[in-house]
Length: 593
Image (cartoon, rainbow, N blue to C red; front, side, top):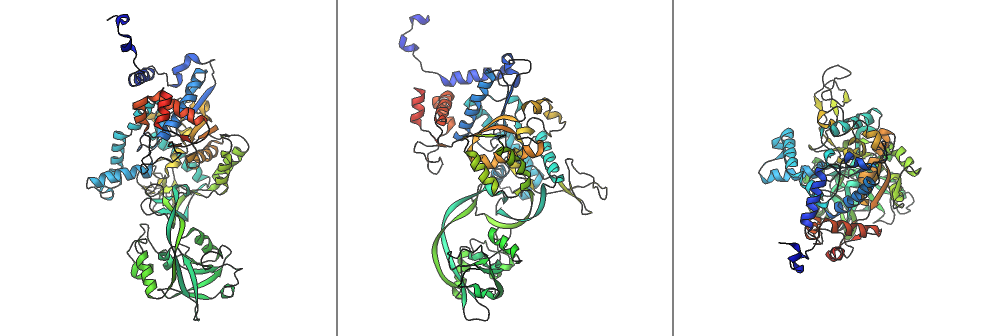
């Protein structure tokens, strides 16, 4: 039919985003427009200016959420602009292996099939994880394509691919040889399900619990000290009772002993300015093996550390009649026993902040454990260079948050009690020698025999993603044939330092700070020049989105309904206002119109 003879109303069709967006995206990708050389005809000279931006690698377990959509949209806007402006442009895509999260997902799948990780064994379990990754890992990549972003897909990297495994080994060995990686017994954050956690992997929640006032009889006296605690189940590990040296009520008792309830064990009364005289009774128990502050007090006063539960949170023989019970489940029974014996003075309602594992939600325990650490000194030059203006934060006030965190920086616990991840490249010889090596089964420098025993733990996920700004450009990848076609020998010189980093402010310390210390320490240059930290996407009332609240906006549903252009344009406009992004279907509808 001739178009001119059609009913005019039949021609008035809306923008068919489902057809148009996918068709043109596919065409552009097939023609290589997203690749470094895809816009070569726009380069302004034989040696054009370069521009590089790194995609924060999303977890292989994940799906595209609205925060991803905002980050990727902003990255894509600047990438397209730089291409058109004649820059040699790299937008680097990738995925993160997400150690704890991925292992937990596969473990649950196996349990549903009646299988157990430990029964399978390490190698078979890891094979199962790779199998699952191959099936599901591409889902989020396809979702990114639906969003319309234009990274150089031919250069896709995964934090567990062979080249990046080599880079991780190189970084570890280099720091180890410089004395910046050490193994020692420290007090760490411990999850009874996931093992050691770094400080920023602990999330604090308001807890409505109890404050228990325990009676500790003073030795050779009819009197007792009243000690307030929120954790009566740890009293089995008490090695002192502590008062403030300026507290006139108690300072005459310093040097005497009290008798530990139930155990009938004498423990000293010590004075330390750490005690808050206004808290509880002004007397606190000291449990060096199970409290971060008490651990430091114990070192100052040479107190022994008595561990009262194991790595799974099960009370041990030091807990007497309560041995074999979970430390939290046993609390009520322990309190009841203390009451029966007259050791409870009173119990009050009490609210405090309790640390939870950011992955599984279990209560995090301070626990003395032998772990691997990157020493905080590795970050000192990066901190100095940031404050000398070699890196700019946008908005600029984020430098204050960065500095506030870095001033309190502790050694970074990098070992995790998992099977899925980068296994720590340290080998233990039968002769007692310990060797960090990039190669498998290295030769012992002491007895010259081949070493076959490797450290059982894996590295914190953020260790490998902290190398992302340069490992993806070939640094430390070695001559692995499988990776050689992904990058050019000049990529590192061309694209490092990266030009710009765009990400949410919520991973400033998880990822950005890790990259800054890694890049400066290993390559002697900060990995990026400019860092733009955008706000979070919230619902129309400014509330954080969560499944429990029922206010989650699924970007894929929005793309299906309104199209990628509408979602991207809406997010970009709202973000430009410089506040938290308040998103609703009404705003999307207005943008579409």
